[in-house]
Image 1: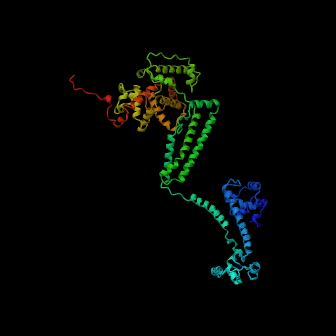
Image 2: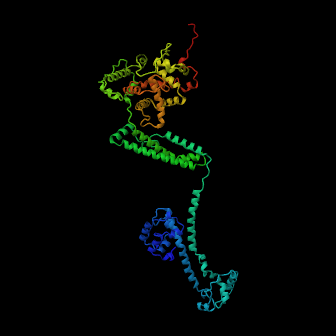
Image 3: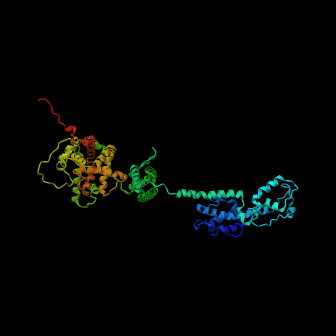
Length: 590
């Protein structure tokens, strides 16, 4: 510490001590990392012309730490400067008290206005000397009340105490002369300031102790906490959808096709994919960090952990939205059938509808022969013939398909039948579960009985997949379901695994319905049999584009059997025959 009194420091001396030197900070117990920036602090001190006295008088703990009068950004650096200020203020106050004691030493205690004592010259003549420096003993202390009582009973103006009485009466003031006892001088203003300062210094440790105090141990194990976190993440992920939580009237119209086309036309599609991919990665890392914090400091019980997990909802929604937009711009647009074409499929078509006149084979070749050479005329004629076959399917009613249409796709290797296949008749939608169980795949495939193939495939599904199909038929609707099937077929034709604009949780549902449609189309159990080849998917894709895939007939049949053969009541009693299978026997003789 400097030898001179800090109250007498000039601006330059103050700057030299607290801006260009670390001695005071080390003496105050401040770490090197918390020392304020000397250049910035010097600029503030010179701008305000702060001397040592002004620094100690005007800049207390409140001004420096709370009000930030010196514009120090870091709180730890402000507290370090407060410690230096307190260190400098302590000897300054001692100096002030020594000056106050010096005035008390020359105090005239024998004035007549108070006690009627002689003047200071007489007092000096009577032997009272201030040069007495011996420590005050405790012997005179019990005599102090007696001397004060004697003084109170005889306050005559002519009273002149002797030297011993004077010494005993005012001996308690001799403690002001003791140089070693100057630190014990009671200054009420300084004491009040010191108490406030101590309270400010003591409060932060209390708060820090509260923060650092170990939380109450959780009653849950780490595995239980992790299970709760995963359950809430699954809940928020499953319940998310675009425009979720947006007020009515403020929804954003996410036209995925238009968004993709506009981004592609402006050349920003790849940049948007990268942007939303970075956003998704950021929110994923943020979610991991939040989950780690919950695992480290879990709540006391499951309810508190659930409350902690509620803070994950915003991050999960942001992550899902970023991933959804990324998939929109990263995947190519899906060419769906026109709504008008789908509506036209609902209307009955006349049998004598003339086939559509085909243009020159050059146009279909450009669409169909994606992986085959287009220069060979034989392939062109073959593809044109396939197109004519699909055109005829559009005008052929469903009842004639089983007899007139030969499957253009490869089927199972033909086995020479040793028996005549059974024709199960009409109205398969009214069959009971027991009847469907007795149907054989060989008979259904021989007769190309697609409706019974669908019923047989639904029966062999797992219960949850069967209920999934029921919910899709009940809640999604015909138009949306047909669009999803067409998009999923094209996705498989491209060799991809995601649909643009479709939530990840909806993909398994769409895949199950699509596999059921493929069982209908290929007339076999697509869930258990071989998967479709590239050529088969190309043919099916062309049929869907031409409108000859009978997707409306498929949907109507599935919708019907979910209310008859596979109704909830029928599934509870699978041994019961259906109402159509009950034969009434008449009692009449006729």
